[in-house]
Length: 250
Image (cartoon, rainbow, N blue to C red):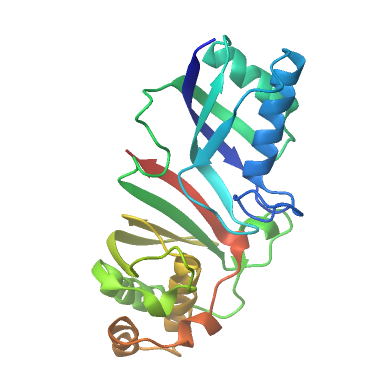
């Protein structure tokens, strides 16, 4: 059997997972997917084969995805639709495969991506049904001030103040293509699109924008945070519950 590469589109509720990346002693999205594929091939008597599954990016603990993209390398005769059916049959209900298609060997879920899009949801009221999928802010927010401040993030900036330091981040400069804030009845939705995102960057941007809405941070403060390093955004990191990876652009 020839080694094949598949592009997988999936959605998941990240509430009960320690993020995307596989870990030894924690339940993760990537780890669950790999175990599922191995189990399928074990039933097909292919348990000793090499399997590689990589995502377009790593979502943190408790973060969700309307659409994540991953690539799977394996040896199989299964058609994409059959593989999708078998995976969904094995996966827990909080992970769902939307589509699987064959791709060329050069495709890489992460490195081939040109930009990513996230959505953050802030609830203006206590909710009985969506607690796991929003950040409920009791204070009244000035959404117009938030919209004005959000414009300051657009373009190429150094987001060192808005990210958690890791050994992998070569540069903290990020090109933010767009930020859109919508005020819809009981929900404030923030959509962010950029070339890539640093660890905790979206949640800290949202947290700072919420403080702008509360009247505690001004536009000139954001300009300074983008100019020089500060640990202030870390204090306002928004909870993971309201964050969704929504689109990967290739």
